[in-house]
Length: 125
Image (cartoon, rainbow, N blue to C red; front, side):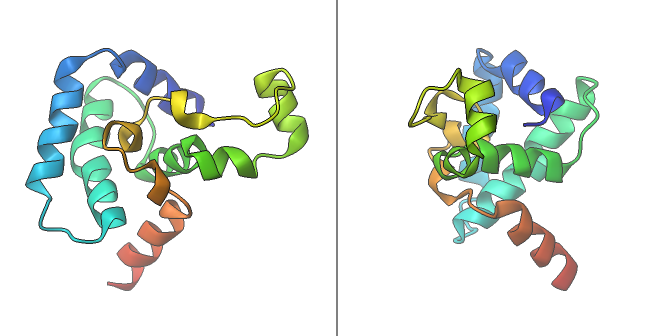
């Protein structure tokens, strides 16, 4: 997982203003019917500018990959040796405890291949 993205989210984890901005953006972009579009747009328009303002240097794809890896399906795709280093060998890793935009929005179930989805959308539309 991207260290700087994780550090940013850790800093914002207990910030009620940050959560409110994310939830307000969910309402603002409610016209986007595709959940992946909504999540990606919130990350691009709300979270990325805030991270830049706070001095973090990562791009939207770093954020999207973090969201993928933080999802339950992403955690299940990690290789066994990586899991042992990350979790001390605990089986059945659960990524629900990782704070990220998709967790605030209860959308972590849509994060599989979200970075690929957004890349293809931005390059073909």
